[in-house]
Amino acid sequence: MNDIILCDNMKKESRIFLVPMILFFVLAALFPIVAILKDFSVKALIIGELVIVLWACLFLYGFLYTKKYNITITNEQIQLKTLFRTVLLNFSDIKEYSYKRYMKSVFYQFKILYLDKKVLINIRYYEALDEILKNALLNNHKNLGQNE
Image (cartoon, rainbow, N blue to C red; front, side, top):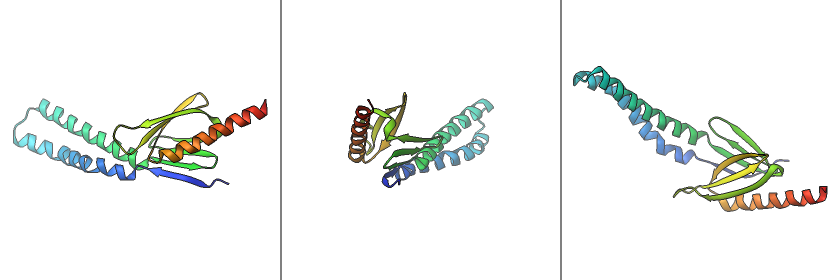
């Protein structure tokens, strides 16, 4: 049975992107009106609108990515859901891992190598995940020794 050991997400961090995203989309809507009233050239209008919309889309991406990011750890596997993909990682497939603090945030970034692939997991509870992964690697080595 898959009992959930640990869950983490970035929903609190998504609020950081919300206000700038809204401001840039409002600015993108108002910029053509201001540009027409101030007699900007068409080229300046297009370039200005493009820059504002690109910034708004960047903040929209950050908001959606952090809103959808979710990690669930059970007895047998790690399930990572992001904006574009879902990764199911069995503990028996893990070969090695390393971690470090991600800049000055509350998150730690785990780099996990499994089945000749690599996945990055950002999580607050690094001690718990470190202990889980250590136990998984020890069990993997014991199982390899028994199979030989």
